[in-house]
Each structure stands twice: as structure tokens, then as C-alpha cells.
Length: 323
Length: 231
Image 1 (cartoon, rainbow over the protein chains, first blue to last red):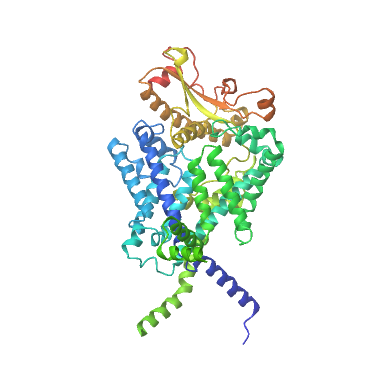
Image 2 (cartoon, chains in turn purple, cyan):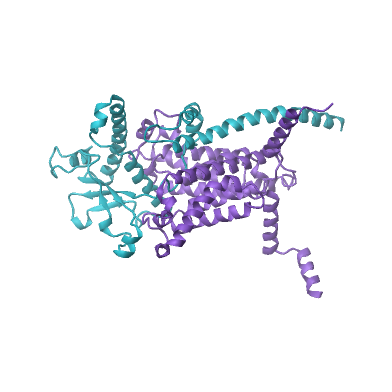
């Protein structure tokens, strides 16, 4: 008996959806994201630590009572609204740094990753007013990494398992975590592009100049580019179109390398020229979510072989030399 | 082996249900992460956002706000604009050494520390509300109520910053100014040979936040400067 067309279509859509979100995936790509995000979280906590009394103390720039009051009409909450004792906030940051480093090295990953995310979230709700895109992307990555099993690769956990974790075929949770990162990136770039469409400078091609001429951001003087308006306007429009169409062009295999290359170029530019190294690095890292775990594994195997050639590689090289 | 097969069958039959529940959660999550950008992007001078976007944002508020998904993602948008700094001028010292700015490339290092101070200055500027409502606001009770709420919000932040400065400057009198640094266009930069950090390009913003930062008479007990220092 033939199924009605509508039913076949619905089944097809459901299968495609399930494949997209739940097909088991390896943890290699997530492991790379986990290492980078853990290290960056530790660094961010360390920077808060450097002036901890000015940021979180009783007479900090924005004290805890002020921040709690500021968010009183919102569903935000942080346990850092409860205390500002010098010892308390130092212990808090020490724990946060330790957890972030555990996340990076992949030790007790099942709980060190969610706890790192939670500590980051608590600090973010306390430090309102001092946050920017870096905090958004790091907390986003930590949240999604809590869903996946990133500790199955490149981790203390996988070493302690004697390799049994590494030999597992993959998990749907890894796929879900990866898809969540990917779709969130699409949302970020789409609305980043749509936001730019509201401004005239992105239409007339001058926006890149004003970004370069922003002294407070500038870390590398590229104002000489202003002598070449063709280049400046081309860079402006390339950025705009790339952001707008990222959410569509990053999925097909044929366009993905171009879209990701452009992402790397734009974020490297932001890191080097606009003084936001941390933000630029994290955005580049997040874009790696579009690299298949198998490809990531091949890359790392290649790097490992290059760094420490094993006996089989040496034999192969010798054979090539003999030939 | 039979037990394994049974377990496998149970897992297979449970998969659609589990996937269905997870799909629902994923759909809700996706609605959550687009709620704020949709509202933010659809603002206009007339509306705070498209009505459906406002509804979605309101419904998703607990999830969006607690989990820190409440961002519009308007990086350098709609246009790259002027930068804002804070300047503190001590009123009891040598004028050449009297003022300091936030952020400061020399003092605030590493770069992330600099950026934190930069964001603080921008945050303070972004909240600044004029000390008096404008005539249009006076005539409309809803606008007046909003002005009052925004003003109180700003003053709370202002008071906290001043408490911090009072301690840092050990009770000395000072003036706190918002500084705006507009971005030069290519003609100004190349034609007038204006350096990006030319002191003339930094403008002290008018007393949008007076009386708290307006110098009435230095040293006068009723001066807001003194108020700022003693508070």
C-alpha cells in the first residue's frame, strides 16, 4: 500500500531534521573548542583578578547592590550579588580559574565544563557594564560544550580511560552541541549584518575607514588604507555581504571553505588592528565548529606525525628515498 | 546477546520519543536565542520592536535573560560611532597632573583590562540622561515616567562610580566628565593632517548629567563637585 505524498514528505523532513541534529558525531572538533574556551575563561577570570577590588569589591566601580538594583526588573541573578568580601571574591575567582583550567585539560570534563560555564555566567551577571562580545561568545561556547562530550578526545579523561573513550563511535550529544554552536553563529552573523544595513556607512562603503580610524580601538595603524577608497569600500561591502549570507553559504560544502576563510580574515583583522585579540581569537575558534570531526582528527594526526615521526613514517620516508 | 538485542530494540523504539522531546527543547532554545536580536533589530523611532518580536521576547524573558542570550549582536552597527571615555579632574593639584582618563593605554594593561575600562566608560555614557526632561516629555505622562525611571537608573550607576572614585582619590574633590572622541572622516585626517589622538578632537560633553558633575564653584560646600567627592 502506497503512503500518501504528504506523509512521505513529513517523514522525509523528520528524517532530515533527525539526521541534522542527532546523527552521532565524534568529539574531535568539540575538544579543540573546549581547550580554547577553557584557556580563555581562565584568562578572563585572571584579568578580573588583577584588579579584583576595583571590579568586585565593596567599593568597586559598580558595586553589587547597584548591579542587583540595576537588574531588579530582569530575570538575572548572580550569587556574586550576595558578597563582596575581599577573601570571598578571591576564593571565587581562584575556583573559577581552577575549573576553567580543568576544562581546558579535560579533567573530570563531565562536570568541570558545566561548572566553568556556570562560574562564567555568575561573573557575567555581576560585571554588567564591563562586558562585550568576548563574554558573549565564551559563555555561549561553554554552555554548548556542557551539552556535548568534548572530554572524549584530547583530554586527561580520555587518557585515564586507557583510550576506550577515544575508540567510541561518537555521540548524538556531540552533534547537538555542534549544531547549537553552528546555528548560534548563524544568528550572530545574520543579525550583525542586518544591524549594519540600518547604517548609511555600510551602504556607502565608508564603514571600514571609520573602524580603522577609531583610536580607542586601534592596535595597528592601518589608516593609510584611507588613501585607497576603492579598497576601503570593497572591504566594507565584502564584510557586509559575508555577514548577511554566512547563514546560508556556510552549509554547502562548496562554499563553506570560502565563508570560513573570510571569517578567519575578518576576525584576524579585528584581533590585530582593532585591539580585540581575545574576541577575534574566540570568534575564529567558534568558526572551527564547521570543520567535521574527522577532518579535525586528520589534521591533528598530520601535525602529530610532523612533530614526532613514528617508525612507520620513517620507514615510508626511507622507502621513498630508496625509490 | 539476546539481552543486548532487546536493549538495542528498546533504545531504537525510544529514539523517536527522545528525539521528539529534544527537538521541542531545541526549537524553544532557537526561539530564545533569536528573541533579543529580533526585538533589537526591529526597533524604530515609533515602536520598541515589531509586535511579534516584543511578544516573543517577553515570553522568553526568563530564559533569555538568565542564560545571557540577551544580545542584539550589532557589532559596529548601525554605524561605527564616536568613542566615549571618562575623565576625572582633580581640583586640588597641579593642573598638568590633575586629570586622568578611562580607558588609558598606559595604565590599563593587558589589552583585555583596557577593554573592560573602555566598556565601563561606554556603559556610563549610554545610560546618561539629561537632568531635566525635554518639553515633549513633560507633556506626555508616559514619556515623563520613562525619563524619571531612566534618570534614576543613571544616577544609581553614577553614585556607585563616585563612591569608587572617592575611595581611590581618598576624598579629594574632583570633577567627572564624559568625553566624546568623534571619528575623523578621510578629508579631516588626510587634508587637515589631524592625528587620531589630537587633543582637540576630544570633546567634553555638555552637562547632560548635571548637577552631579557641574562645577558651580570649586570648594563651595553646596557645589556638586564637593557632593561628588564627599558622597
